[in-house]
Image (cartoon, rainbow, N blue to C red; front, top):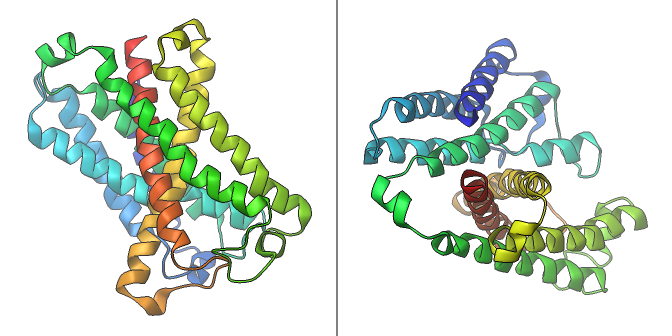
Length: 282
């Protein structure tokens, strides 16, 4: 099922790009935005990887797995739909347009399903049969631990801390007043706590007594949002480091971006991996 969903999303990405190769709104995007062409190349690579996975013998050969991981990474880099939605809702001062938002949304869904397919494509039947679940539990513990850097930083800012801000009262200034700041502060702290608790529930033995589908839904939604923001953000951080002239003005100082986006990317991969394994096993 996930392999066909990956192919469907990638095919839809190619259609969107073919119909709207360069929408007018895209001209105003910041230079740190992932190019739309990369999304299309990622879609072609992912289709080839899924076809190779379905035809490859078990255990899957290493080249198939390498192509699959490359495809996942390229799709995740291209899937910055979180930034598109924030711009469309006027929460952040950026540009967005419908075709690019659709392209990014399809890319991040395809990235998640691509990862699910790849993790299910075992390198060894014997290992798949004999490896106990506790080996995979480290993904869940990692996902729980990776929630805390962001959680603690946002709690510090919400309590009035200003280290890392360009200007004082930056949350109010950037997110449109007290309600926007409340959502961007304590709202994200609560979301991080839910993500950490979900990761633990997916790997603790007691979590097996909890309803399966709510855990999977929360896990996949959290993983998709984290990968969407994290991987695209990492691209922007690298682009800025290579080309300082491409840097865009923000409300935080330079060290915050690599910390937050790097944290999001690692956290998203860990949460997606533990959610995927839970789905495969139960």
